[in-house]
Length: 450
Image (tube, rainbow, N blue to C red; front, side, top):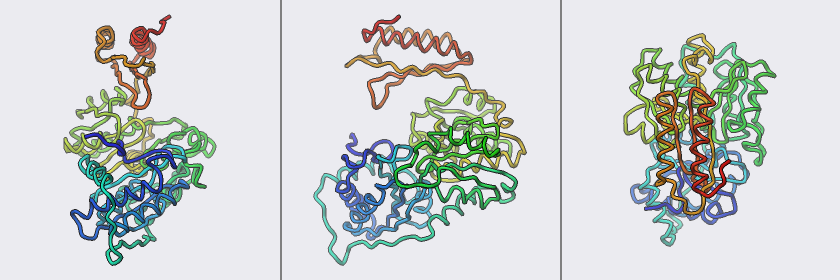
């Protein structure tokens, strides 16, 4: 089956355009309510949101849709996505719902769901919801309508949960940390977490107005964090995205570390404490230097498709705990059921405090391979997958790189583009190989290659 509405992370789009309209969102909640009531007489759903102005409208539509299907609702207010996942599990709710478009601009919004266990829901559940959307609504009678209440201390409960993942015998006293909340869901929570663990906190990107989420601040715009760390002579800088499930981190020198490096650090820190780490999961885009460094420590490394959902699926299949993406989506399943930017940041700070080493020192074994990415426009109907010449050139590059680099070719999911990525220890070799393969694609598309 193919999905009509659900993507890789819920339902997302531009507000006011299908499907992110109040009438559809009401129908969606009503359909989800009927799916829930097939297994539970009186379900309870938690609803959290980020700081987009459209969150008010969509929250009301969800509330009405659930109530009309006989489902009780608990409103959490602005709360990070992983906070909703945590409270869904802690409150023994039937479902968690997040109104957010993550790192997208404010004009977009979306709806995503968590199971009672605080995990992403499977394909079968999404298919059941899409099937229910095709059925006419069945309104609950007045005596059976759902009720709504607000959980007033939702933020406080999540703050305590985040702090509980940091070692009890350690403190952040003496540290100065810049915290960038992207004007998003963690704008109040993130500064408080680090402050309550003892740090001096300088907050930026923490004054949302409904329209400025992810605008020039946060994990997708890390230069603001780099500048603030240098200006305030801070020890660390931590940037989250709009719903706080993604992390970027900066050291005292103003150097930015990506998710690949943080993943390696999380593994190395556990190994240093004598814990066993049989393997970890990255994606097709994870830098090869991380794979090499992990294997040198005896840790198996597996690549999943791009997307934290696929990383989680691979971890579950293998019974492993640690995985992530270079974008800063990181999973530590011994700490939380889903990716959490705050908890990932605390894992990094814990490693630095415990070892009394800087990030640069802890990551001295990992020197990221230079990457060259070339986007090549495809002509309509161009069958690049079955091109003999492209296969020949790709094989030649693989032989040339050997175990000192790799090539990845994949189609864009949103544009008629072929993405050719080559990474190698030698940046000039990476560039030359990527261009050679890209020229093959261009030639077959009828583009003049100089």
